[in-house]
Amino acid sequence: MSDKAEKQIWKVRTVKNYPDAHNHLMIGKVIEINKIYLRLECKTYHFRKNINSLKDIKTGPCEYRILPWSRIELINELSDNFDYKDAKLTITNDLTVTIDDGKNSCIIASTYDNNY
Image (tube, rainbow, N blue to C red; front, side):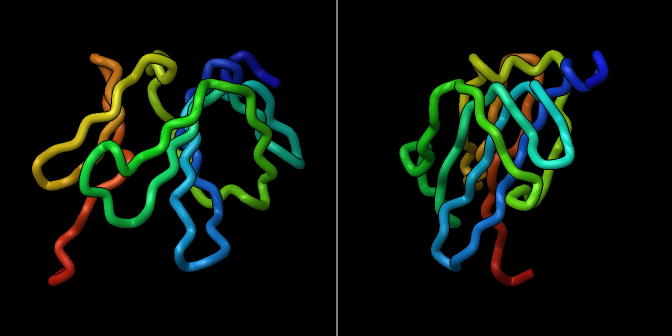
């Protein structure tokens, strides 16, 4: 693995196999990439479609996790200096949830008007 890959911070969304499944996000540092899996040192964020407060989001501890590529739905590359270990969740009046480390911010979830 290259030095660049070792410094990457990713937000990874995994596949949901059933309609009422929670959203599963992992945010953290890429440790290993190979043909079969992605290994991250990361925190997890689990939540349903409708979020009314930060209590609706379950945050897991920072741990090493291995994700098979077949379970990964979407990857967003974040700034390589994003402090994913100490970043805090915030929620706005329009129910947009972000994770913010004081220098960088990333959207976790947002509610959209159904009229669109």
